[in-house]
Length: 203
Image 1 (spheres, rainbow, N blue to C red):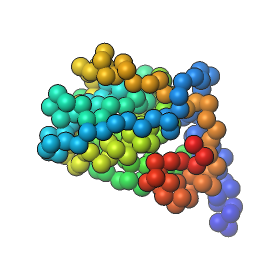
Image 2 (cartoon, helix red, strand yellow; image 1 turned 135 degrees about the vertical axis):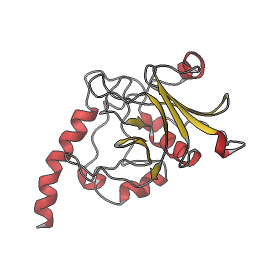
Image 3 (cartoon, rainbow, N blue to C red; image 1 turned 90 degrees about the horizontal axis):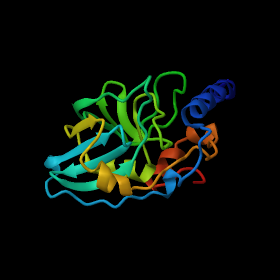
Image 4 (cartoon, rainbow, N blue to C red; image 1 turned 90 degrees about the vertical axis):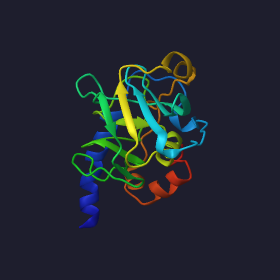
């Protein structure tokens, strides 16, 4: 019976991955090659997150000092990432999608700032491509997860002050040409064990 259920889930989960990540515009480095430098804050209570949806750049800052900067993927025009001021109120390193389709799919290093909206690991594209969440490169998600805490403020705007400087210097990341990992792997505990090591499947 277990094999029958898993067999029924695999086509559904594969559709979620394909519709969320497949593209006809490949090019650029994949996100698994990106390992951003990070500076530790002087006072963790002063850490903030600044997200630029226009530039698809995320900055973890302390005052005017950027501790970490990374390319991200944000929501499409029909499913936008919400703008405004929020606070991260939930962190779960080993989170899986709860709703269907795609229940069980890993959303590693989940940082929730609004009900059903969060930052997490996900395949990154150089244009808006999500259902509203903020997809991050794996190592960037891991480092951001360790920098923020419950209560960390996040500002989401069309632009941020660092877009033309630090943001512009970040690489163009595009995971669209990567093969989809087997669902048997994505549904297994190994996906989280690998994430702790900064890796996923064969990438």
